[in-house]
Image (tube, rainbow, N blue to C red; front, side, top):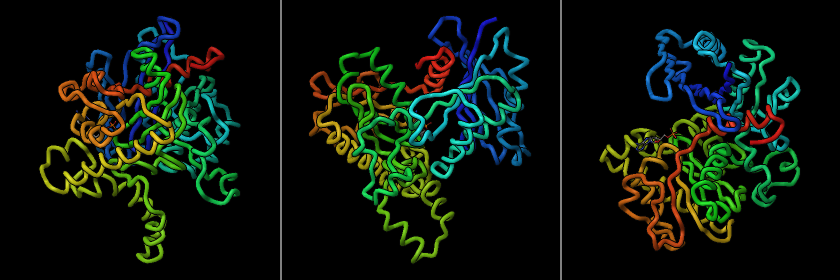
Length: 397
Ligand code: AMP
């Protein structure tokens, strides 16, 4: 029987999953994957083979009340009947927050889960859903090894100065510090870059994960040295619906002068701001590009301006710049946004090849560019599978 591992990424309104089979040691092969979306509204499930053929689809039109656990139970029951001679030996989970303690993936048990529960207030929109999936699977398949892969871990050893807010020391000691996120994506990019251009992979890189959530990471010799997300995934770049970095005085004003309650401020900053808030049209970059309205143009330009401004700050953290990597929905596909960001970084030695950029080529910088610019599709699910195997084998990926 061929062994298999499952990667699970359980968010507030969606659960993404991927099944990797282990014919070859150390090289998990994607065999199927899919998503449950619109959880809490009318959940829908689609499972696709590697060839893109739909293996199973289901919509719960009246399923607003279905919990993550109930939906996972359905998925599990389906998987049990369709494993085609594969045995699932472990499930790897994306866990957003590993706090100050968890610097590497680890096998979950009750004691670790209890520690991770305590971190829920630091990632209220993500961590509870990550942990709910782990608990649901522990009930459905007791004894099946479950591995936590942390989004914060890649940033764990960044320099102390990049972890500090200018707040009293006691708060830093309590964990109010800059953690950084999207770590699984950045780890994957650096592994891939080491295959594509090993010399550049040991240089000074800014990686741009530009999707619905967006951040930049400064990477020197394969290690995170600074990143735009901080204490929460709200910091840094403008995102689909999140504001990114904001004068903290705005938050005080919203509460003290406009009388907004904490929950309303949270809703505003996480779900009503960013591209959606500025355009008043959509959180989706593609929709904005096709809109032609001036508010959409303003939102796109602000997104690019903010990204370039933060990239320049990270170049200072790195003390130079050899390469830039673009990834995630916008970074991989949106040539115009990449061009807008890179144009603002020309003074750092970034020169795009317009034709290569337009066709989303792997290398999009001009041959004369001092900074090499690449587009690398991210694969957080594969990174989770690699870490899961690493933990099962007693090492790391
Ligand atoms: P993600 O969170 O990585 O799925 O990224 C979502 C964002 O990527 C949305 O703003 C989409 O509009 C954008 N996006 C996805 N595909 C494309 C595409 N082919 N062209 C331009 N933007 C895209």
